[in-house]
Image 1 (cartoon, one colour):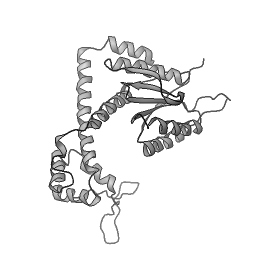
Image 2 (spheres, one colour):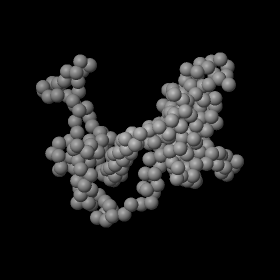
Image 3 (tube, helix red, strand yellow):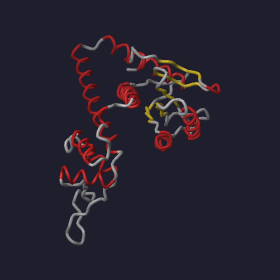
Image 4 (cartoon, one colour):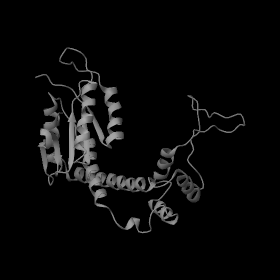
Length: 273
């Protein structure tokens, strides 16, 4: 079923039990997301040595991953010991972020005890963190529930997402084509704060050109998310087959590294006019 029908149906037909399950699931995801955010924010202040120290002090072990062959058999070194992959900072952070191994309070206590953060660090929540959580919540709901139907162009995708946001966030102000300096326009703006830039790239050039836009937008809007419709496999204007999936994945990384901008990608078909 297409997006336009599904929005109307979901708004009018779900039972109270269905709604309660959705609410409980969203609440659980929000709690898990918030806990992980807190852990990651703290661990960013740790040196690599301190990441090792907290593992040894609290658990008595550090993260390890045994090397196995393609059949799942453990490989051993010349001394008969299991070979291990070298663990980097990311591996340690993921290990410590596992709620089955560490409690958030243990990480906080360790950070204060070893003067990694000031003793009053956890008594206040910066406003920027609050805004970031709001933005992440909007992004997560788009990622989970937005199902675009066939599109004719970028404006059509923009219209679909606008309808979805208005149906999902009744108490928020949703604007399309918000004008800014130099006659540029932001595709979608939520509460004059959160920006969503939409693209339906047909070539690598379209993705590269977005870099200049993001650089300009970031000067005034710190919260930006890119929404991309991947129409690979569809016929282009010159009867060529569009193939941009690999380029999209490459530029997702560039947008994140250069501007700290997340990118959501939806596989979409083009509807003939």
